[in-house]
Length: 166
Image 1: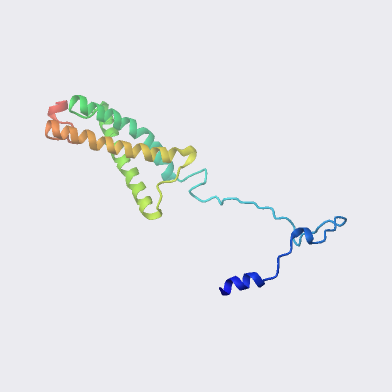
Image 2 (image 1 turned 45 degrees about the horizontal axis):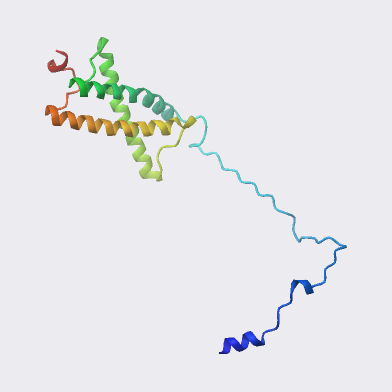
């Protein structure tokens, strides 16, 4: 009840049309209009150059993911990994490729735990693409190795054996 009396006894608001307008003098604002400029700071993650580790991961990841794909296809179809090649070069490339993918995924997980986000995109988004390809390669490794273990009862070792290349 008290609020209703206060509302009834309050003075009536003045309308905007009842205020005098003087159109002869322009209205001046108490301040100049603001110009808003927003620029992001360039951090070391966004820098176009990238570090040596980023460039090595990009090159290593772009080389290792197709090698792993070839290796997994060969393992699934023949039951053996890639042949050793001349001087063991193809087998060595296969082993280093597996290590590179595991290293990139480990680096990504460490960065995710430390910063809350994955690896930076890198130049042209290549490091982000390599990160995604590495996770897909790791998933393919787990699937093919699991199928190999279920079908054959074992996974071929890292060195050429008599069963495969004897």
